[in-house]
Image 1 (cartoon, rainbow, N blue to C red):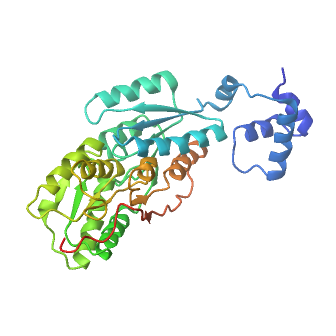
Image 2 (cartoon, one colour):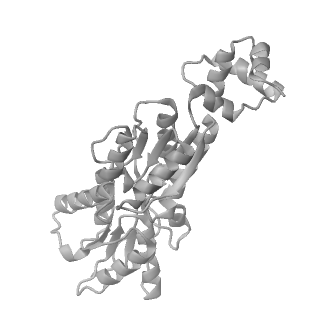
Length: 331
């Protein structure tokens, strides 16, 4: 069986250099990386994972904890994180966690005892779970967050939620809508609540008075999109457009519109948030805000695997599709 010594001899480098290349350590020159990788390929060398763990004191596992009912959002982050883990020689372990209560601590304690992960990836709403963040800090377990809004230790990707909510408001107002319903996120989703703030900004700057009856809270899932849509469309003056703060709820509104015989966008415009795969395959395709979710997942893994890195700036963009358009005359 080929050993690390064989690779070092063929590449004419030290065993330590081979180990650094295999473990994707920083500050290895491209020339040395190329020599070592060529020797690895020629000898068909397969690093021994157990030896890697013993040598570096690492498990080469990263745990992804989530409590988000929107599968499209979670899966796209998971895809990016999983591919980056594979490239770096890590494994991604995925665990759903119930919100609040002691159960989430029990899940974390069992996970750490069994696998001893090198780091934890958190997405909303766990990104702002104060109790969970405190427990991770107490355990001295590195963690990285996507869209965390609370001040906390560790790597955090800050996202332009407020500006994105404003983009949706500006788009619908530019189409001619003045009575716009919004399906807001659960209160635990602090990052997504900033989308609502941005939406309010757009209304205020356009001189449109806020009508509280047009703000209906959802649960970030498909069913609550239908329920909130029913409540909005039952108003004495129903909205001509609805902005749902994630795609799952927007797809619920689309389904409801089809069910009651409304034309989209002629009778009702609908906009979502996240640009999940389903937003493109719905009919009509959904106007939504695109987050670079896979890239964010990759960046979090880089931070956990390689230590502190400069936080990249991720831009959100409005994707205009067939679900939004001008309101019908008199709407």
